[in-house]
Image (cartoon, rainbow, N blue to C red; front, side, top):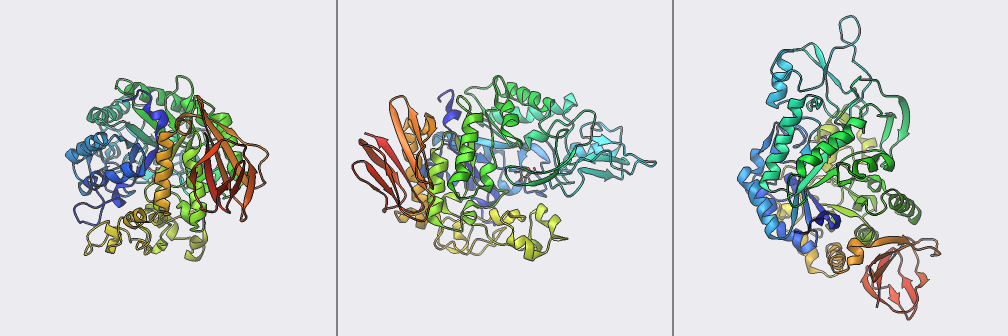
Length: 542
Ligand code: GLC
C-alpha cells in the first residue's frame, strides 16, 4: 500500500441502515455492505466511510453509542465487521469507520453509572456542573445545543446537577479532561485499528474540548458558510486550543500503525481555523469543508469557493468536496432534479484538486424523499415537529427531517428497489422514482448519471494530473463558463463547465483531445470549443 495513499482518496459514504439489507429485516447491515462492495469498485472510488454501526439504542441512528467495541445486533456482529474490512481490502478499497468521540448514548453504562451519584466510579466521566441561582436550577452558562434552539445543559434529577449534551439530551458529552476517559476512548480507537481499519471520520470533532472555565459564548447572530443560522459564536465550545491538541494526541495514537491511518474531521469554522487542524505537525489529515452543501448552481458561487479553498488549502494541503451527506439535502434536489446540471456538478467535484466525498445514491441522482415531520424517525425532526408548521418545513431548501435523505439505496427495479425483500417493509420508505433511478437500470444505459460518475472516476485514475496535479483557474472565459487546468509533471487537463442556458464558445488552441464530455452537443474543432448549455468537458494536451 502506498504510504500516502490518503492523498488520492475518493471517499464514498455508506449509511449502513439504508445501504443493503442482507438478512431481510428491512434494515441495512454490515454483511449487506460487504455484498455490495463491487458497486464501489465499479464506480471507481477507492475509500469507503461507514457511518456508525456500533451498539446503540439508535435514538440518533448510531450516533449515540452504548458500546464502542461492539456491533448493534441489527447490523451484525464483530465477525461481520472484520469480514467487511478484509473484503474491502481484498478489493483494493480502504475503509474508514465513524468515531463519535464527543458524546456517548445516555444508555452507555458509563453514563448510567455517572448520573447515579456524584461519587460513582464514572462520576467525572461526563461534564457535570452545579447550576446557578439559589437552588441551582439556573443553567451553568449560555451554551446552546447543536440545534441552537435549546440549551445544551440538561437537568439530572438523580445528581441534582446539570450535564452537558451538546447535540441531543440523550447524547451526553464526555469529559475529555479526565485522563481515564481519554484512555478508554483511545482503547476503542486501537480496537478498530487493530482490526485493520484504515482510519476514521470524526463526528463533531471540533466540539470535544470546551472552555475549562465554562465561559458563556458571545451573542453574535451570523450565517455559517454552509448556511446554518447561528445566534451565538462558539468561541468557548468549538475549535478551542485544547481541541487542536487533542487532534494531535489522536494522531499519535494512530501513528503507531502502518501504513498510515487517515483522520478526517467533522469541524465547522472559517478556513483559517480549520486549517489549524491539518497544519504542519497538526492532528488530522483533512477536515470536511461544508460550504458546497449549500451551493448555488452558478459560476460565481463556485469560483469564489474554489479560489478560497485554493488559497487556504494550497498544496501540500488538500481541500475536501462534499455536496450532500446523511444530514443535509440531496444535491439532486437542490439542482431541481436536472440531470444536465448534476453532470456538471459531478465533473466539477471529481476533477477539483482535493478529496471528493460522495454520499450513497448521489451517483444515481437520488433526490430527497418527502416524509412529513409527523412521520419522522429522525430525532431532530421530532424536535421541530412540535412547533414548525408542515407547510413551512416542506418549503425549506434544507431538510429538517433527515429521514428524507436517508431512504434506502435503490439497487434494482424490483419492489423495495432491491434494498430488502419484496414482502418486508424497509425502515424508511423507498423513493417512488426507483423504477428509473436504480443501479441496475442506470448501469444499462450509456448516458445515465451513474455511468458519468464511473467515466469521470476511471479517467481520474488514469490521469495523474486529475488525482495529483495543481489547479489553476482559467481567466478570460465567457461570463458563465468556469474553467481550470490541472497539471502534474508533463500532463495537463483542462476542465470547462458551462453554467448558462446557451451554447458557449471558447478558443482553446491546438493540440487537445476530449477525454470527458457530459453532452453530445459539446464539440471541439481545430482550436474552437463549443460547450452545450449546462454541460461540462475535459480536454487533455495531446
Ligand atoms: C454529526 C452527524 C449527525 C449526528 C450528530 C450527532 O453531525 O453527522 O448525523 O446526528 O453528529 O452525533
